Image: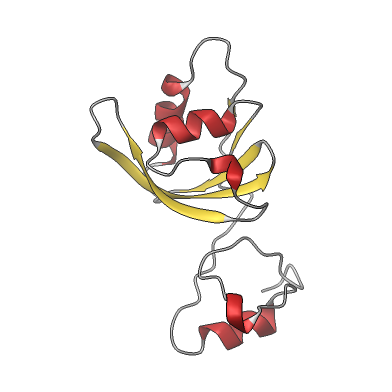
Length: 129
């Protein structure tokens, strides 16, 4: 989790996706996190949870590495907190030709047929999914 007044600026500076704060709450974006030479440090999905709070979905072997990289990218005076919340959340990937139907049945948010999202943050109807 990356949060704070300057979270969007730091993520936009470190990642290929720009304007993290331009998306709606619950919007997700796939991006690459880069080093100072433009090389790829990690690929991840950034989900905007609040105006100044972002959940990062990273590979299972790199959460600590990504957190360190973000902390190194915070400039003096910037308000950014990085917290490992991986034990608090889970990821459910539903794929295939029936994925839209399955997701519609499982989750609260109605999926508009004309605006079906392939990546989004949604709350389950029940904690038992």
